Image 1 (tube, rainbow, N blue to C red):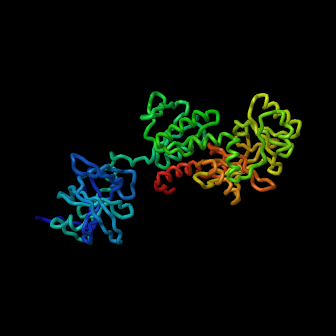
Image 2: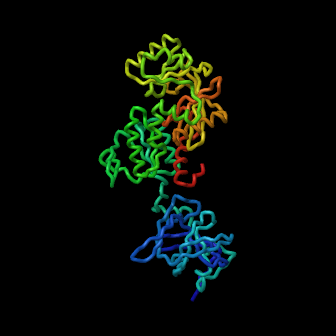
Length: 458
């Protein structure tokens, strides 16, 4: 029988596995042959044991992928050259080198750190191959272009996770950035308009339907970005996703409690976080004592349901405070009164917390003649370094509220940093523009971390 003469590296193929060409290291020092494989999973086919796996046949190319399956021959402990012991699946399949084809056994292992996707060991060569270690590619090699051509129909690598962004406006800067960051990190992103989702409550088959009767299933994660006016419905949807065992970046419970200003302040105080002295009342008869209780005028009066600085009034005098409180009371609105921190000078800090870490901080400054520093009200953002104490407060506040993503607003007062409020859907535009940081990317990383995915290198 004529033996095939090969060099120390050769291109070969596995017709039964659908691998048209792959570069192999020919190594007579290794007993067993090994093939690069990921997502290895055994299964039963025609009452016999098989194994399926994926392979990226080209080194340093995770885009090209081939799905393979083969009969399972054995499970074996293999000791690598570095002494590492690993249990591997063993398959049998036909190897084609040049014009010769014969069956060989191979172990399956992740060879990402190795120089070659395939190692040809001496058992597979025995009686068939002669090695000239000084030569390479004696049987020819494909060019980069011909490799592209050969693999042009191979599927793209699975796009990571299937992530839904549950929000109202796809044109909003924050929502566009989150979609973009997810796609850039290799995930399949879907914008889910809250108003176009509806729920089937059922013990056996709970479902979420979308415009046109489409059932929303197979999502790995949901990022809820719920505007205050739609909190109740948005949280009902988030809760339904949670019931379907979908990972939600902020839970419905956390969002609901963050939207209740009074309850959230009580939660924060229970965690030992300092806030400006605050009063809450439900009767205009108590107005006088209420004002005195928080240190007199000037003082801040807040509508409990207000957001983005709306429903927040600065009363300069006691008389003005009484008028505003009584006006709000006549509307049966729940209100908070809060001491006015004059030395803050219309400035506050927004600390953006993702997964227990402060990822960015800005200082927001109100427009002249305005005391509210919200960017939506024309406030300006500038970069500032938060102190260790301020960072600690922000992390503690997000944890107290059970929020994985939070915008924590802190004010600098003569008695130290005080917490103003915690936002469960903080906007990205002001903070990303000012700091030039990829905060949307940090949110996607927090989801990857939950799935123990290897964080993709930037």
